[in-house]
Amino acid sequence: MDTIYVTGHRNPDTDSIVSAMAYAALQNSLGERAYTAACLGRVSDETQAVLDRFKFKAPLLIENVRTQVSDLDFDTPPTLNAGVTISRAWQTIHKDGAHITTIPVVNEDGSLYGMLSSGDIAAYDMSSVRNPYIAGIPLYNLLSVIEGKLLNEAGQMVDSISGSVTIALPSSCKNLMLSDQNSIVICGDQPDMIQKAMETGVRCIIVCQSEVSEEVRSIKSESCLISTPFDAYRTVRLLCHALPVSRICKTNDLVCFHLDDYIDDVRETVLKSRFRCYPILNEDEQVVGTLSRFHLLRPRRKRVVLVDHNEMAQAVRGLEQAEILGIIDHHRLADIQTGSPIFVRNEPVGSTTTIVAGMYQDKGLMPSERMAGLMAAAILSDTVMFKSPTCTQRDIDTANRMARIANISLEDLGHMIFSASGGDNRSADELLMTDFKEFHIAGHDLGVSQITCTDSEHMLTRSGEFFDTMGRMKQEKHYDMMLLMLTDVLQEGTRLLYLGDDQSIQQAFNCKPEGGSVFLPHVMSRKKQVIPALSGLWG
Image (tube, rainbow, N blue to C red):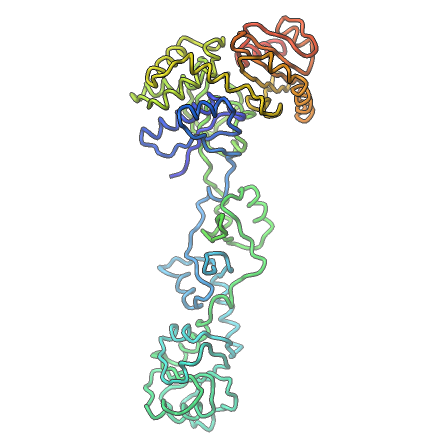
């Protein structure tokens, strides 16, 4: 069953992570079992404290949802050991009419040795017609292919056989040239020829469809004497097929891919390559399948559900290659487009988790105590303990209901949440990126970070570090404006630090900024107060 990733926005906050976890848990509880909560960045100190409080692990961290080799319906043909006979390989390629074009050849540990195609076998067959010499046939490979039996003791001491293949036709043995011991003689019911060949000491004698007398078998000779039920013609052809596939498979300049390779990169490589089939390796370098060009025509895309956002700039990278199944959000509608209708639930509440809690109620399912506590914490976090202007009565009622299920105090939980985000042990970069979002408004590009705390005056002692980092980010990302909201829960307001046009800040918030800083009383929400004010100015 393919995984469905439930993911919040980049630089996730507590509501983003918890709403993803709660929605995935809801769907899995209803029998889906394919949903996995994921996050797109480092878990903040606040969120980690909440997860620890209710004994949850952080969601899976993913970087993108670009289509990978693992998402393709690639072939999984059998693999052959390098020592397997050509005869066995041919049978495998054509087993049950499968007509596999190419088959991977592997070492004993499953790693790639080479690639073998039916064309390689056919080419070897044609070359063997003109060259009667065969080198180094493993004895037991030969016995297996021609269903042969060893008839003398000398054969027990032989490991491999080499020589020019000679067919001894039923004629006078005087006409048989056996001056060269380096020969493989194939004959029938011809005791005189067999005796002469053994006395000459040829490498191997193969007797076709005939019994060999005890007298002949007992001749002292270094020759390996073998009997086979096949006729001479078939025996000659099967001799060539007794060689191990390592002799004829391609081992040089192989192009292979790994399961985590991205399809964009694979396509580029395939276009420059002459091969028709490519081995696929896992993280342990073991062969798991093969990829052909037609597999790239209609790749199976990753499936995602977006929570707490609906903007491409905030979404997981590679979203354009994924299949969006749904969006659950409480922000303004933005720029994400889909190729087909999807499930969308967007409601004007203070927390996405409030919406997910309503979905539990719609399905007649009560969250566990631990999950209810986690959801209460997310609502408190996103509504800033119900002081944000985005907070609705529904958020308050839902948080209280979750608290009753979890048997916890919302006041104690709220103080724990916002005390955890002091950030003394973290760099300015880390603090700025903890809850950071990009916005594009009427041709203006801006980055807005928000740090919610209980002591903004203490955070302001690091204003120099913040301005340095903001300046670097503004230059690197080419923002028109860079803002940092130091939102103080106790003061019920925000100290706004900014780099950009003073006049825009003055007009948008009807204030008199000084030195890139201004205190905005009762401003608690980036979504409902800061961004709308700038949008109204520039729009």
